[in-house]
Length: 387
Image (cartoon, rainbow, N blue to C red):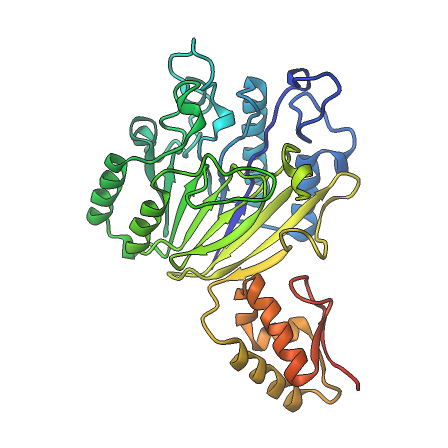
């Protein structure tokens, strides 16, 4: 199992770049020295890493480091990412371009990617790895030991104000990716991940029309599934969400520090750790939300749960029956700590949100058992109800 840290949609900018005086669109200003550590998301994250003793194999950033192509925000945001990578002892940072990282609506700009290309030899892919194809073809394969990342630039065609409104991957790119995959020994990699900024499948909500879904995104998913890719990670939408499409988990990481849309959607700013199993689309995601006066915390009843899984392959009825039987045999008072329960039933970590709810209903209705606090929160206990 590998550990993947995720920081998405930082939207870092200089405070003077706010469109309206007094407006606050992000928690991460490039000119904020961070006098209060809890009110600076990067300093607060460093505290979380130290407090929880967090580490990661790699750090992934699905784009929008900057806000509205703010150059100081881009430079400061990237510097923050590299500092966090060091704190996590991760092997490298792999990033992809977000629409806010480029000046696609400035008609006088020739190469909209130029600032990014000269930003740092380590961006978006570590300098020891080849990234020429990323800029010339809109994608690249990143090999890090037994990890293969297909890094896609979904802004590749966004060169002016007209094309900036849409994201796509075209048939030429799909064919090129497919041809390259046929020549690679993909089975030699234990972990295969797609990193992209825009969402490859629909991500609608009641407040915002979904107008910028990746064109031919479903074909991309079909292609990578054929070659055993296990996980798709994207940003752009500031609304963390985990969806399974064609048996592949597709995770929208939400926003690390932007306030745009987050407040409207009653969502949270999030930092994530993904734990991915070998050669299977199976694992779990632990998330922290940013509370400006507390730092990064785990809370119950958040819009996106602070713990959720993916890839559970059993049946809820069987799992419920086995849990009840185990409690009968191994406890005297029909109560157990949830950590002990997970030791005996590790598949609990792989339950998705709906499966967590289904298990809770199954245990309560058939066996009078309930979690405290209830799933999808982080339970401490499983308890037999007294009637």
